[in-house]
Every structure is written in structure tokens, then in C-alpha cells.
Amino acid sequence: MQTTEIRIEGMSCEGCVKNISSVLAALPGVCAAEVSLEKASADVEFDPAQIDRAALCAAIEDAGFDAS
Image (cartoon, rainbow, N blue to C red; front, side, top):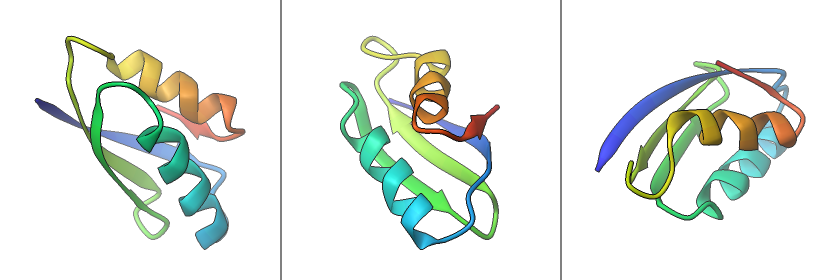
């Protein structure tokens, strides 16, 4: 397993946090995702054999947020 921190811009409330958490949890290879409104980031634990960091960022961006 691998862990990465992804900076997220555009979150304004706990609804945004829940939305991003759901998006990440639904991805194959994601074991855990902790999204923080205060830190404007997500800590994601994932299996690099199934998904990579770029795909995680793309999923967040597809949900309407900026990820880097």
C-alpha cells in the first residue's frame, strides 16, 4: 500500500468533504481516504498496482474540484 496527500481547492463545506470521500472510496484500489476541509487536502491510502496518483486527482477533478 502507498499513501499520498492530495491538495484540493474548491471545498466550502462538509458536503464537499463527503462528496470527495465517496468518489475516492468508490475507486478500485483505494483502501482509505481522509478528506479535511481545514487542511484543504485528502490523505489517500491506495494500492499502486490498481490505481495511481494521477487517477486519484482526475477523479477529484471530475467531481468538480481542483486537485494537485
